[in-house]
Length: 197
Image 1 (cartoon, rainbow, N blue to C red):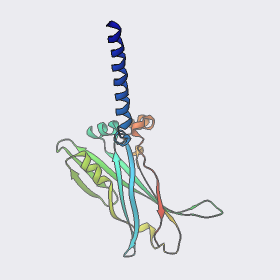
Image 2 (image 1 turned 90 degrees about the vertical axis):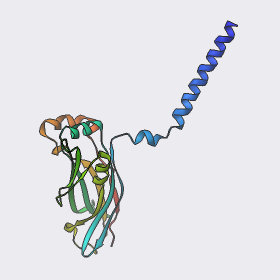
Image 3 (image 1 turned 60 degrees about the horizontal axis):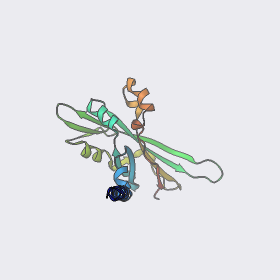
Image 4 (image 1 turned 180 degrees about the horizontal axis):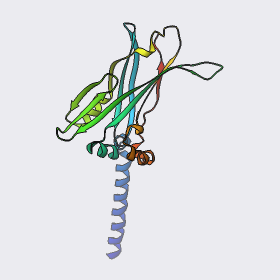
């Protein structure tokens, strides 16, 4: 009788371990990955309209706990979007025809309990009641004129786009720690596509 209970207990534990293993294996990895701080460029395009190139992009910002805590303590976070026009060459290294940095900022106003998203190039500002909507707005770049590019119809080139948190824009006392803390290293993939002719 006692021996039978021991065997039953071992069987129940093995079943429990198998069940836990099955749940862990069938849990979508994406749900775990979505919680990681990251910047991801979902889509981007550069079109030529009315003698000007216009940039459209969708960037997904997921902030780390350190960045969110700093934001709620009055620290303005600056995100740079770097746009480059690269002309590939066969025999020499690629030629960078143009590089442009577009700075965007997000800050939290404690008294109003709102998040302000600013395009520092155009000086446009918008306020939002939640961090998620502010980050969504931060990541939607809609028809931003790229005047520095001019008319590039005669070249065969690629467009390169990346986004990152500008640690140099943080207050000076915060920078050394931010450089060595993984939660502050927020940098996107680099997206490349052919420049439309």
